[in-house]
Image (cartoon, rainbow, N blue to C red; front, side):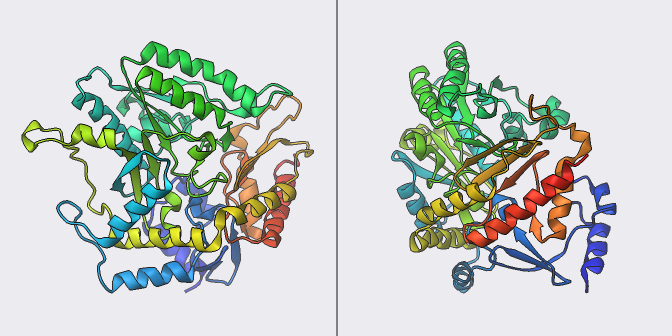
Length: 448
């Protein structure tokens, strides 16, 4: 079987995620035969550097021998068991380790299957907490503009990217939306910290006005990923934690994309020295091997549901594969690698290499190159002087994607934002190659 054969069979039966399938008439899906390290290989032997960690999940490269060995070992004993009324070693050990790594005070772990499911859990827990606490009037959520928290209905409702959300508006709950502290819009000479502090004023007013009806504020700490890799300063999180405490509102940290070392610290919240009431984790949790997510929360939240059965306070939320043993074992192996490889220290050098290699600030169609840890984004614009964006209909980012494939790099832009989120096993030479190809692609995509 060759690439064409697999693509044809695919198009006869599959419907791909986040895809206009008609695009595949001109650009067939690429069948991948194997992966190793940062590389993906198709059936013709072409290789593609995975610059986006296969949708931000693959932390230590494809085919990592340590994670594979852990999964093979787990297969010999237990693949899965219902987690209602039963438990198993990988689920217990993983919860213990995550609690040990998380900000102090997060002491309970609730498993789910994916990032959107984790957000659903956190939203429901917060709402249900206030009901159990005798405050049923607290039913609304506060979220940031340009945010993204997933595509199940609850998660979609508290997001604010119209491309994903607009068509489903009639089905969704109505959050209170506060303007993002997105530092792309800071004034000339204004620091990220000063802008983020200034933008917090609207959040403070909103919390003061809506505290009586608000369950929680939900944010993506430091980076709004699907919203175009827009970034802000940790001071915003610090101010938000203080304000939520003053007004009696929960704080939900959606660390699904930014956790596990992506922003330079193990969890992004560490950079503000805060502890949210709920922390949602997924994506890199298993190193990209199996679906798994969890919500870490506090003993106070847990206690609000702990009662005699007849009081009907239990959190009756479940997924069939909750706490899957194989996924938990992959996650444990991933956490082992952080310790064995001293990953956070190594990532500082890699992040510096990314910054040095992606020096595109002087390009006539690059408005900004921004970076937080192992996330770097390049914003393409029609007019650099006033940051006029390209019309979305021109699909400049697609041009970048297509050129990248011809040169052996998987770049999947977010609209007109080109970004790097590579596996942590990437080398400085591979970073330079990735950036060189991106530079070529940007020139081609913006030449007319």
